[in-house]
Image (cartoon, rainbow, N blue to C red; front, side):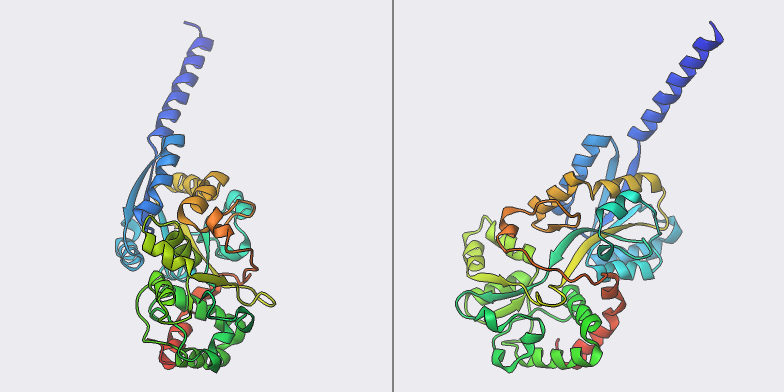
Amino acid sequence: MSKQVLRALAMVAACAVAGQAFAADVVNLYSARKEALIKPLLDRYTEQTGVRVNLVTGKAGPLLERLKAEGRNSPADLFITVDAGRLYKAKVAGVLQAVKSKVLDAAIPAAYRDPAEEWFGLSLRARPIMVAKGRVDRTRLTTYEGLAEPRWKGRICMRSSSNIYNQSLVASMIAADGKQRTLAWLRGLVANFARPPRGGDRDQIKALAVGECDITLANTYYLARMLRSDDPRQREAASKVEVVWPNQAARGAHVNVSGAGVTRSAPHRAAAMRLLEYLVSDDAQQWYAETNNEYPVKPGVAVSAVVRSFGEFKADTLNLAQLGAHNADAVNLMDIAGWR
C-alpha cells in the first residue's frame, strides 16, 4: 500500500475520531431556571449538535452555594440564573470566569452583559407599573417616583423586600437618583401600601383584579403567562390589569435579565462556550420569546403576540452590573423604610 494511501486513511481515521469526540461531548449545566423553561431548548440543541447537556436545576441561592462548596472540583460548566443581582453575586463569589466571544458581543447589547465578560444576559424581562383597568388615571402615574405620591395611599400592593426583583428595581433607583432620594421615595412608597407585602407577582396581579389594591409592580412575563393560561380564572384576573410603562420621558423602564456564565472550574469549557453562543442565536431567542413570554436579549428578534400587546417601550440603558453593585444598599434602604 502506497504512502499516499496510508496518509489518506490516517486522515479519514483522524476525522472520524474527531467527529466521535464532538458527538460524545457534554456540557454540565447548573440552572436556576425551572426545567420546563430550559430543557426543551437544551433538547433541541442536543438534536442539532449531538452534544449531551446534563441539567441540574435548583433554587438560585443553593445552586450558588453548591458551586462555591465544590470549588475547583465542580463538574459544572455553565451556571444559569435569573436577575443581574444574582449574576453579580456569582461573579463576586469567584465561581465564574471571563470569556471572549465575538458571537456573544455581537448578539448582546453591552448593558446586558458583565463589563468584564464573566456573565451574559440570555433573555430580557421588564418590571413596569401595573394598574387595575378603569380605576387608575394613567396620565397621573408616569414614573416609578410617582408611586410615592400621597394620592396613592392605601392603593399599592407589593411583594416582599426579600424578592430579588424588587431589590434590583431599588438598586436601579439608587443608580439613577442616589441613596438619599431613594430612601425618601421608599418611605413614601411604603406609606402607600394597601396591605403588608406578601405573595409573588401573580398574587399582586390577582389582588388588583379583585379590588384589594389598584397598583403594583410585576414582571411582564407573569401577566403574559396568566393571559395565556389554561386556567380561566387566571385569564380573567389578568384581563383586568394593564401595563403602564414608566419613566418614558427620561431613563426608561427598569429591565433585568436571566443570564449565564462559564464556571471557573468548567471541565468542558469549549463545549460550554458553544452552548452559550447557541442560546443567543435567533433560533434560541425566538424560542425564549414564544415559550417563556420574555423579551429576546438579541435585538431584532420578535416578541410573542401577547407580549407585543403590552406596547413598545423605552428601556433603561443602565449597565445591569450596577444592580448587583447597589444590591446591599438597596436592601439596607428597604429595611430602613420599613418594607418587609
